Image 1 (tube, rainbow, N blue to C red):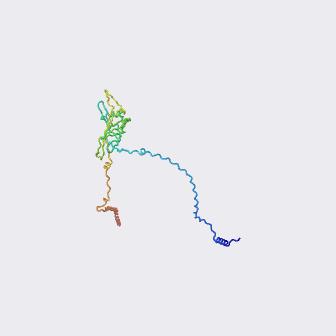
Image 2: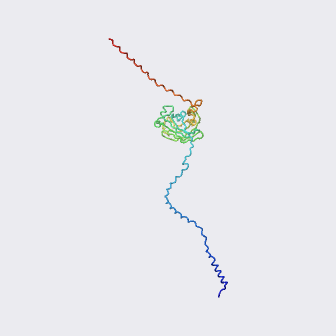
Image 3: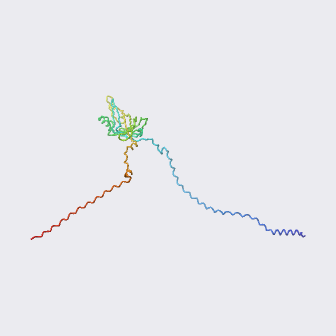
Length: 313
């Protein structure tokens, strides 16, 4: 059975349209963005350096000493050395003789004293005395004192006194001193006083003078002064001896010493080297050279000898 013609025709047209249309292209994926070139491979890591042996650590420095031990405390001693004026100083003593007292002194002595330059208060003292210089005013008694019964001046030529501490209260002081006689040293307490301090000038330039006195008591037998004699039950010489010290010290402050020093002669100034008009002085003309000594005049020639007379016959 044949299909109707309009169906055939419709089928043919639809087939022709299908053939005329281009075949659909498959959807393409959008081109991928260009990728960045791959990074260069990282350089191989340098091999780790072999760990070098660390130097042995230095031993820790010892801890710094404390300020007390590292730096001594600032000294408060402002003392200066004063000189002893022997003409106005004395190392004396007094001893009991039966019922009275007899005094004497050592006439040759020296000392090194340090004291405050303004107040004159003594800080340290060392003194020596020649035992052979003992003087009581009686030569026979002095000779006995120089012998072995007392000082033995030949074997022990000096006695010595060293102040170990001084404590001041106003112008008065107490001192603990070591006294040595016949090589025996004992600690002896002294009491003393600063009598005054004054500026003086006795033709030696301006300087300070300070005066002192001090006393102490000792037992002479503690130092080997062993002589003893009793008359009618009374000791001729007592054991207790009183020491009497008197000193006048001198100190010249640096300012006074500088003022007393002779001034140096001033160098001539440039003005002194010019004439009153301001010009340099004319050079001193040189002395003319002495003329050379004249040559001695030549001796006159001797006159010719006279002709010999003709012989006569």
